[in-house]
Length: 304
Image 1: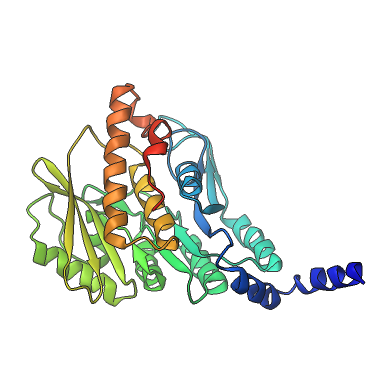
Image 2 (image 1 turned 135 degrees about the horizontal axis):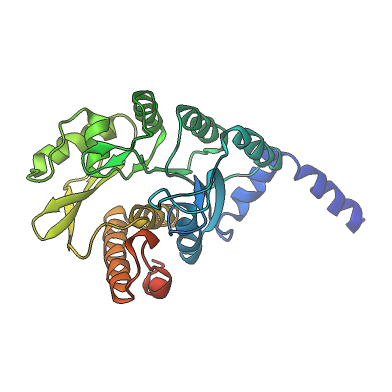
């Protein structure tokens, strides 16, 4: 009788609807899961190579969906590259057949308009009512789009952020997404509010605009729809720009989102941790191309 019952349950678990019901009943004790859609770089500490350990340390299962494979990131003189676009639908199809569900879906750099479309389909397939969608619209920096980023991709990214709950654009990306002229410094709070409000009107309830230069400080502007107050999080500028800092930041925001951490608290935590990582990298004389040395201080990241 026991074996027959176990067999029946096993068969029923093949159906996503039944499994979703079981997961809902167990939701108070089950570990959270985030699907992370980004590239994998074997060396240089960026993208999934950063997200996987940080999200895992914060108590959330990180489930990678690779968009491409790099031997090392493109900041080095040469690199191996394998575009995974054609394999992504088959990869994702197996997750569909398993009936997987996620508490969060987080995206990083997307290399083509087709990949952006695949992500939209992924969100439609796996997004649930309580699934947190966190989009880091990686498009450019320092006032310029990356050389591989086309106008078609910009248009598709504008459509993609409509599906997000949280977006984490840097200042360059924010300007591009709102068709605002870029300036390196001198931003007023009302200007940032207007851009964040415009982005939020397209879909995301929460926006953080990163990398705003304010003299000796670097500021992140926090916007939450219907909040009584919007605010800055500022840290003293240290060192120089390094690869992977945006991935560190976005990974903390994503894990905190599914863990129910307040948004402003999460942004403050992520900003402070990135600064600590840069300082530790300087202390250990880590080359800029090698990213930030987060492993040495990961234990300082609070799971709140």
